Amino acid sequence: VYGDGDGDGDSDDNESLHAGQTKPQCTKARQENRDDNNDDVNNDNLMVPSKAAILNKIKWGMLERKSQRIYANAQVDHSRTKTISLSSQSASTSTSPSVEEITEFARTQFPYFNNSKSAQIFLENAGGSQVPSQVIEHMVNGISHRHRNLIGSKAKEDARATMMTILGGDPSTHTVFLGANATSLFHTLAERFVESGYLRKGDEVVLASENHMANVIPWQRIAKRVGAKIFWWTRRSLSETQCANLNLEYGTRMSTDLDSLLTVNTRIVCLSHASNVLGSIRDIGALCQIIRRPCPNVQVVVDGVAACAHLYTDVATLGVDWYVVSCHKLFGPHVGAMCGRTEAAIAIHAEDSSIMLGTVNYEGCSGIVGLGSYLSILGDGRNESKTGVSLDRTNPNALKISQPGDDPVQQRHSLYAMPKYQKLSTGRLVKSYRHIAKVERHTSSYILHHLQNCLHVRLIREDDNDADVTSTIPVLSFIHTQISSHDIVQWCLQHGLIIRCGYFLSTALLRAEFDTHNQYMEERGGVVRVSLCHYNNMEDAKAIIHILGTMNGWD
Image (cartoon, one colour):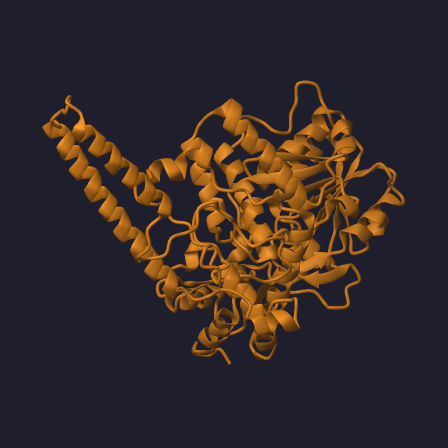
């Protein structure tokens, strides 16, 4: 439908039926049945059908007619559905779809947007994204069949392979671990550093002040236990007064210069690929080179939760040791995933210890496989899943619906009728992220422009000339000098738009750096955060600017 496709969607030996047509095979079968019945009539051993048989025949006849009506109605609905495809004219002049085509295509995949009249505008994607039908479909099937050794193990293997592709790891040098969420994986990883003896008394751990608390608390805890030191890499310098107001029990040094914090005793450096408040994307590859010059054996742990929905991470080329994400912020199930270098994992291996604890969430694993399918069709522009309607709606044979006589339960949930897995390739994934970035630049820049021109709005973001900031994700945080953040969020909610305010588990250091760490700010609800993704269109972007502009005292 858009992009360079690898095929024309699903093919089937049997042609799809159109309303008012009958299937040749069915006609033949019925004729044979009538011939057989005629033979039976000529037999001397004619048996009168029982009352139960007659009732059963009536019952199945009624069911068949009902199925035919459902099928006919589905065909009518299909004919009314708007075509989601590039026009032949646009396809001939450009291989790249427009922003509008990408968002429209994406929204067809998310049940949240099925009912456009009741669905609220969702601009709180940094807290957890909506979920496409491919993920839901795979999770339903995954939970409908519990067979741990066969189905569960296969789902886990497929999920780990899918996450390896999404995160850009190299199977020969990397391993993917799954967990309940990103927070639990950080905690488990930190414990392995202690149990293995990798982190000891006198060692040093460097933390970025912009880190989510999930990538802070585990390191503070183990540092206190073994007697290691915590150093802070900050975004802005703090005055002595500001530092005095902060409870930095385990912080001994702070600096905006990362290189100055690195010593021969540095053992772990914990960074964020992108900030869930500032929106800044770090050049992780360049930072790893800075870190490894004085500390070649240091382990670099990166939180990719805020970044993974917006950019291709390509872990294998970044030079990191551990990269952690949470799939529920990546259009997937609530499952955490961590891609680690195999050598790094061996370095912290301890006897009787494992990073993957307990039984893996198998239905969540199935959802990750579905996530791979979604990202694949986003890059290809074609939905080849077994259930539902193909996105190539210009193809009359693309629609596949249950035929009269089929068992809908068996068809949807049979072990041998699982949703078709459209395997995710790196090529399609990269193309998907190009489409994602194209949309997000367009919509977020519109909102940013209007916020920058509002006299009473103070944006919480870094300067554009920061050397290690390569770009931004579509996260815009701000405060209004006249209206509290609580009131802004409530006003938007009353007008059908979802955003959020607070501090989003950011560190006290970061709040102090951007002058939001005080009781007055806390009482007003912290900062307002607007976060978009690729299914948010320009109508969404224009809606929030319009709604904010209707508030008394906004301008």
